[in-house]
Length: 368
Image 1 (cartoon, rainbow, N blue to C red):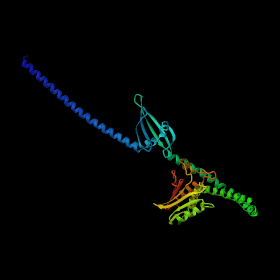
Image 2 (image 1 turned 30 degrees about the vertical axis):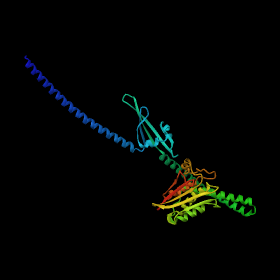
Image 3 (image 1 turned 60 degrees about the vertical axis):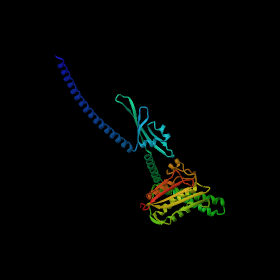
């Protein structure tokens, strides 16, 4: 083969290789474009799934967190962050089960924690999922139901024995009055008789309160002056010399609708509580307002006030911080308020007078 033929053959071979290389390049380019489109699709799909997961996590009412193998939180929702932001919660929430957390503002929260390990296909630990459920409202509702059941049982008992108790009480009171009249000149026996009568009236008031709480009578609605109601309740709340207490009344001379007797009793109980916690005297402020379809009553004092623990428990029947208290005052107030379709509220932060701030509201058109 001549040199010219060899050169021609070589050129033809190079051309063939070039065509083959071009074909391979075209195939590689097409494959790359397909891979790029597939990669973009997978990225979009992954982004969509991540956004979907984030949306689900954000909308969950429970706290959720994902941890890596070292226990570090790599993803969490806002509910978890809010619960876990408390320094005291950090150690407590490392164990499964229910526990109580004290918030920075002093309020107690009840949470339930459950965690599950995440392992790879080879059985290696890669992390964990943690769920924290705030059960405070459920617990409060359960306690309210428990209190209602307890008061219903007490009411049934009180209804059954009220007649039997009141008959001998009336006899005790009657004979005490007779003794006081017969021995009018004996101051010591007269004072004892007065104490007996006062004790009988107190027992009768406790029985009446139990019956009202357990089996409240229907409302007897009427229209009356808000200003007159507050003034009357304040007068009835103080037994004896009122000069020790400064009572500020802020109420408009406006007509409202409700059960005047029951509302006066509720307001009187709150004012009497403010008086009793300040036996040496102090300030009391009573404010009544009409706004946005509701009537609101606030009673403030300059006494010791509530701490967060007593503020949470003072609604419980028979719970009292006073040695001479029976613990039925606030439950009775709440019963009357709920009967009107309203709500009792206790501000754990207290009043600017330095003591407690207790309020209740009833709708402008109360239940009948």
